[in-house]
Image (cartoon, rainbow, N blue to C red):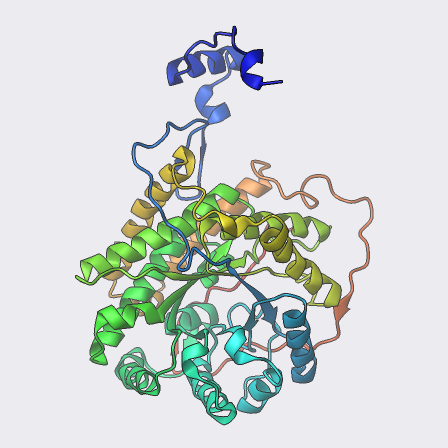
Length: 478
């Protein structure tokens, strides 16, 4: 039967916003439209129940839209031999990238690989570096780690042109996440250009400097604050390249971004799309042809819960879905038991297979930027850009990101946003499934790997109020 024949005699009245509003008011039966159907983000951005189709749609796909995103599995075991076995198994089972997390990193959450050249070589033993995306997550020894990694490449006689690397150097993220730097801000800014010139001379491709917003997110920042800080960090990186006498048009592709995605699917998609627009705007302001942003997305740590950890699987699935369709170039999923300790093989497998199903069975990567033309996502993207740009400009007036952190200005705004959010959970305006609502009658035991927790580094020359990663369930005392 032809469906067109079924409805050939049916005449549907034309639909428009006024007609929808009339029907909505009727269904509300006197309830307030604003209080019932309109919500607001942590940044105060208004979320309407219905959006018109935008007159123009922007295409904001990942850097290589013809290929799927990279499935980057987290390697953070304190035992290097066990970590090497994990890395080889992850690649064998379908992961296309590895995210190496070392002790002292702001996103190590108490664990992480020991920081030494020998450990790095042990972990990468047997890994086909020319076929595997490799990122070293931001941590206090990132600059030394870059030297160690280059030495391993030279020892194995790997062709640099076939590599896909991210060295993960971001002094501001270290300063914010640990509360200290091993040298003064002035000495750091003076020494970095020499290091950059050294790495450019080596000809190793990939992301050298990174603007990491995960530190801000997991400490409680709003989306606009996270984006604004990443933008300020990236602009500071551009200045370093300029001081190193590197042409910005060639240097910009060596700057990457890391951000957090959470269970708010549409807002996480908008955040990634907004970052692409903002980075293009910065490059245009520098009078260079914009290069697409290289974005790594990691699922939010602050949304993970200790109670009913299986609900974390739902949260991370929503978050990774948003990262994939939002246009992230690589995605890491935190295993669902991470709040209990170092995740075991089962939790790691769930995290990996979630992405494999989305990529190979659901084929989410087959459509580049599916949110393009969506009234809601396009509007959220534009509003986020404006709010993030305002935060970026404020940080610049405070002397740049490092100086703003040293004065405690960024921290003050982040903690204010965190406290407002926590208050809403305590008042019942927001809910954590499995924790504040629908709790289990009895919690089940959770298996984790035996591993000692690593103490946070305490040495430094310059100190600031640090931004610790804190889960919502901890903060609300649930």
